[in-house]
Image (tube, rainbow, N blue to C red; front, side):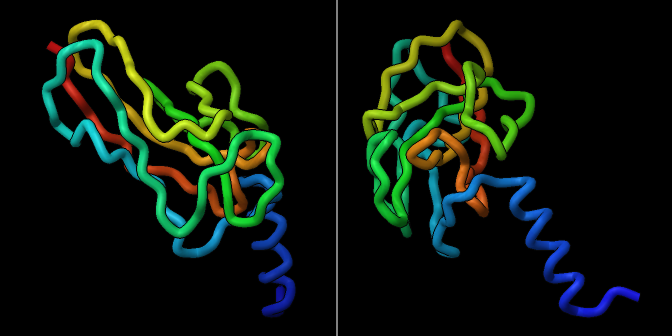
Length: 136
């Protein structure tokens, strides 16, 4: 039988396996300010990123409780949470908090993922809700 300490050790190991090494505060939250879920937009359009409970810092900067944005466009699944995010996401390593997107007409999804100084999601990944927009 596994005791309570054994369960805590197993959960710690699992936590490291599903997220990076940089901790995120428990109240950290990333979200898309605009466009809103379900909104109809014309391309090109601006996407504004929101973050609470943490600060924004460029990639490579080692400052506690900070990260930088990565935008997943039309992602079917989230990237590997233990590695630097690759080409499936748009990187904003300069600390940008908005971008202009040009997408073809039709339905698209957007989702933010906060990355640490090495572009790796935090331990307890900070991920926005996925929103759906329609480009006319």
